[in-house]
Length: 477
Image (cartoon, rainbow, N blue to C red; front, side):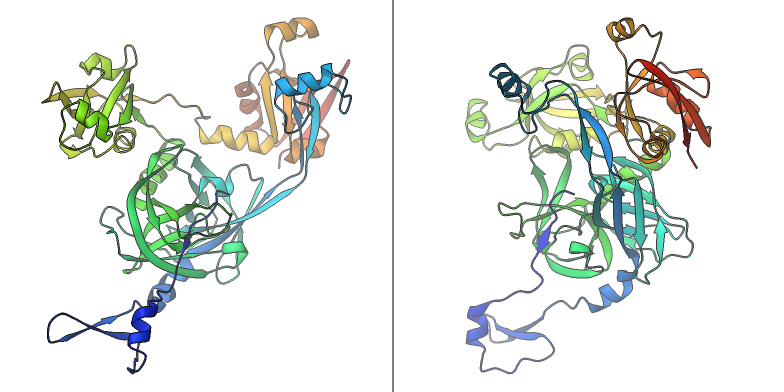
């Protein structure tokens, strides 16, 4: 999992405590003297009702990734290919040079999630469930269910899991847009597997950009979150979910008061697309951008740094076609301010392809509106959910053989097995086996194999192993 978020659940103000030590304090009320004649009484937040009403909707997620064997091309673990080659040339016969089989033991993990529909839909982080061969979902009443991943999106770290159950407690979904900096928030999750642990703090910042996280404007809090909290809900004081706990910033591996949650508004958009399409469809306009610094602002004749300056235009893409130019500073999209370069990709990616958007740009010191038709971002993931399920059902990772490899092996077609787990591993399939056919049908691509597997309860694989051919029968039930 990604490192979790961590928040402080209590406030200690030693100076005030010392000054008021002689004063009786009851019912969590603290008298604070104002500059006027009257004292103001403020009450510290009480989270008991929030926990009582919402704790049952938070679940613990246990993951199991089966032991497996994979082929690695670098026989020197931890070394890049160039350094490994130098080792070989200078006589270090520690490991035979060339592709090697690497045995990876069974891996177990834990995380959190929360129920969003009474029939068993659960939201969590993608990094909690990605690659798992088995999911066990445990409720607060100790019931356990087998979970199934309906879809996940690594770019926003959102996953949707389904369990077969009815009449489950459902959490209320709030609005992260209405969340305010300084507002009290609480997290419920399973840090280190300790189910239904409650921590609390305040919202430290909104729309926080993190390195390599292009599509998520994080909510920053100081709520204590640790390994196992990931995927759990962040609540406002109304008991509404406003975020999904995802990451922490730490130089030590422990909590340092900086935790980050995915806004629930974005998470629900991603959830809807995963359920409807099996993937997330993102918009793009084909421009490279950077933030406007103070120096750049002065160079462009701006009073204050703001917006995103265009540094590159992709040929024949929407931005170029619409007439955007390198050096344009995008300051608004559809009338809503673009404060920095972090805002623009988040807004554009959330726009449906084919939609026309109005970008307000500064060009030569003057504002100009450019209308751009948003295109679709090419997907680098397997599209249909069924394909993912079929691959997981068999338990292999494969790649197509190149023309040169087919010629050398004297094969008309075949798929090289690179990773084996689950049903295929139990049946005896091994890395570096070449699958020639499945249930009598030739396989040239992974799609060919998927189409056979998803319709079958058992599959007979014709495999070439070194210089011989064998059949491997795999039970998919």
